[in-house]
Structures are given as structure tokens and as C-alpha cells.
Length: 429
Ligand code: CMC
Image (tube, rainbow, N blue to C red; front, side, top):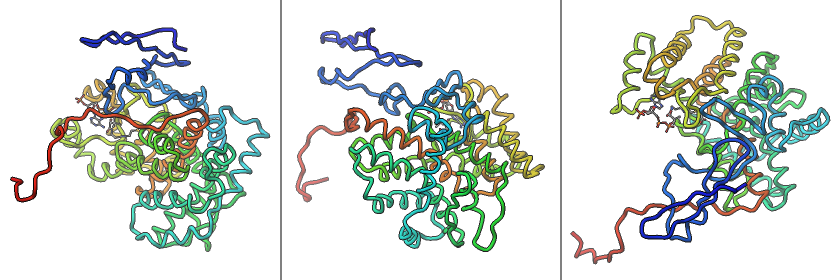
């Protein structure tokens, strides 16, 4: 894997030879691990040029708009598989056979309920708390309930924890929503598919059980597939970092949820709708586009741009198609917010500022619109992202623990004071 070498010339010191590692596809990486012996470190805030780990799970080619899970293009997974198949793929490396799928689905369904006592946790939160705040708390609390699967050095424990997380996230997400609404929490129904069951727990009540629209369930399943994993993004790296200290899986996923919450990451789907509200009307678009272009204005067009995709976001293409299907199914036409969104999309695809900077609509732009159309409140959008991404997080966590690993511990370029003495209070000026 390392037949090429790079040479680092440091003024006044002997050159350092660094191996160049080659992956299956994608750019080579320069292995700088031996640099510590020279007493120097690399400096890369934001990890713009740093590969933090080796992984076999997901590959992204941002220049060409490619996203592969275990080698399979996301477009094909969205069309030919479903979320639980994608989960199996991410966790195990291969798509399941029919028999393996039946077994996996049945195992997941065995774990959909949460410990009855977990319900009491909710009462400690205000009803108007942000759902992501509650999610961080209740997912972290799972480690207080499932002691029997917390030995991270035991592969079977890791397996059970992974399944528990995939199975319980929809239940917890729906419980968070019901709590915020003051409605009774709904138990999962194992006769439904993963997506149908989630919509059932979200929108049905004990006094009225309505059938779930297959088109909306398919859209929900697509949203789950398209958010399932995205290699070493901020939240996944957070999960790996937390996991590298030996923290238990539920605590690691809670850390991932916290990292996802930010508007530059998973919070963007919520921020899209908040922005559309702020813009208010098509007549105000020019003002907001001018703000987005103004270097002195912090305003950014939410749902546009991506750290890795500098062409198109392949997830956005599938999501746009699903968006059209959902709006058609629900008969939504002439919606002012939607009209606004479509006008923004048009501008971003034609305005030189956005073209030159490759700022295309990303997955969150369309998923926000779909979720709103389905009737999911804006504050729940990032929770749904977290639900879907849990399998990606836990797959990366399992991958890291399955081979030798080190605690993640970056260094720094220190620019503070050198050592100085503490003066007595009366001598300080
Ligand atoms: N609106 C206006 N200008 C933008 C935007 C935007 N949404 N995004 C980037 N730019 C400009 C930025 O000002 C900079 O301009 P210049 O070169 O003149 O200084 C240029 O484009 C490059 O931007 P950057 O900030 O260096 O890019 P980045 O890779 O550090 O940031 C990003 C990527 C996603 C954080 C950023 O594009 C952004 O904040 N977008 C809005 C939030 C959003 O939709 N996030 C969801 C990402 S997809 C979900 C996920 O995978 O988490």
C-alpha cells in the first residue's frame, strides 16, 4: 500500500521521508505519523487536508458528485434497496441475501421498544425544549438502561448495541415529538416497515390510527437512506473521537447527536426553513442574495454549498425527485414557501457567485421541504437526520474498534503566553 514516498525538507534539518499511502480509489495520503520523531507536528485546522483514519465504509468524490456505500452508488441504493438493507450493508459490508434481510429485520423489530422507565426521563424536560436537546439526553441515558451490552471489547456486545440503536432511534425520536405536543407516546408496531412505523408513532394517537401513505413512507425511507452515512464528517469524527477513549456506544452516539445539531452540519435542514420564513416573500430574495454575497454579512444561504461536494450533491438529485413525488401526492401547489425555495434554487444554479464557488443546493435543502410537506415540524428535522445517521455513526465506531486504534488526541500550535509568574493580588495592575 505504501510504495511511493514524499520527502519533507525542513530548513536546517535532515530531510524526512514520508510514505505515501494509496487507497482503493481517491487521493493518495501522505503518512505523517513519523513526524513526531522530528519534534514537529502538522497544522490543519478544520482538517481540510487531513485523513483522520482508514475506512472501508463510504467513499465520496466531491468533484464528481459520487457517493458510494461499500462501493454501491447512493442513487442505486435509493432506488433498489431500503433503509434496513442499507443499514445491514453499512454495518456488515455486504448487502443482505433475502434470508439475511429477513433475519436482520426481525432482530431490529425485537428491539424497537425502549425500557418503560426511560419514559420518566422526558418529564424532566420542558415541553418547549428543542427536540435535539432532549435527544442528546435520552440517547445518552440509554447507557444507564442497557448495561448488558456495554463491553466495547466484546464483538457481540458491539453488535447488540448497534442493533439496539438502529431499532430504538425512531421510537425515541417519535417520543420526543409526542412529548413536545403533550400527546400520549405511541408504542412501536412491528407489523409495519421501519419508515411506516416511524410515521405511525409520529402521527397516530391511541384514539385514531390512520393508515400510512405508501408514498410518504417511501419518501421517509429515502430520507433515511440518503442520510445514513457520509464518511468522516463532523459528527462521525466526533463519534470516533469519543469512542477512541473507550466510551460506551450510547454515550458516543449522544456526542454525535450534539455535533450534528449545529447549523453548518445537520442543523441545516431546519435552518433552511427558518431562512425561508425570514426571507418571507419572493420580492425579498434579491436583498437576501445580496446579503449572502456580502463578505461583511454573516448571512449564508442555508441548504447551499458543501465542504466536500464541489460539483453536485448526488443525494440532492434523488431528494429533489422524491420532493416532487411527495408534493404531488399531497397535492401541494402554489405554496408560497415552496415557490420561494424553487426561486432560490433557480438563482443558485444560474448566478455566477454561486456557480464560481460551486454552491449547489445540498441534501438538506430538499429534505427540509419534504419533511415540512409531510407535516413534520421544523424543530424535528435534525432529529430525523440523527435517527438516519445513527447507523453510519455506529458502523464507523464498530469499524474503529474492530482493529487496533489509538485515542484521538490532536496537538496544537500554541500562540499564548510563555511561562510567567503569578503575582500577588495587590501587585497586579
Ligand atoms: N451562502 C453564501 N455563500 C457561501 C455559502 C452559502 N451557503 N457557502 C459557502 N459560501 C461562500 C463562502 O463565503 C466562501 O466565499 P469566498 O471564497 O468568497 O470567501 C466560499 O463560498 C467557500 O465557502 P467556505 O465557507 O470556505 O466552504 P466550506 O467548505 O468551509 O463550508 C459549508 C461548507 C457547508 C459549511 C458552507 O457551504 C455552509 O455554511 N453552507 C450553508 C449550511 C449548509 O447548508 N450546511 C449543510 C451541509 S450538507 C449536510 C451535511 O453533510 O452536514
